[in-house]
Length: 147
Image (cartoon, rainbow, N blue to C red; front, top):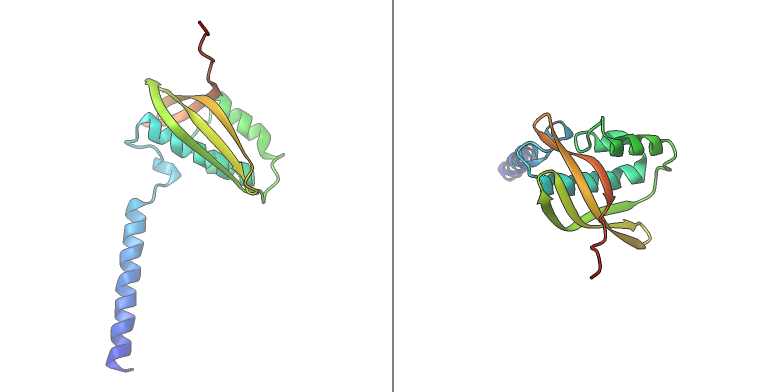
């Protein structure tokens, strides 16, 4: 083996180890999904996980982001068997604000793989459970009274 080839292999090995270390320290697992996160970050991550669930029907994808004893998780669980895997859905929370502790209000856009999208104004109610913010339920934002 030439010196140049050994140097190339060593460089690639060091790069792979560094990338693996970076990934392991920056990736968020669902076990500690919302540790240290505020309501807005937790709601954003939960909405994105919901999109993954919608595409696969795998309820495990929302574990850690939704309170398993909450009404929203129960609804998703009831829909899991009727979800056809293979779809592509992207759920995104925009213009989110913490209205009060445990309540995030924002615009959620659901985009299908064909590019069609629907937009909703949602209130995302969170519960602080096991040192994490988790989605309890989601409801349509009430309209402001017209004067």
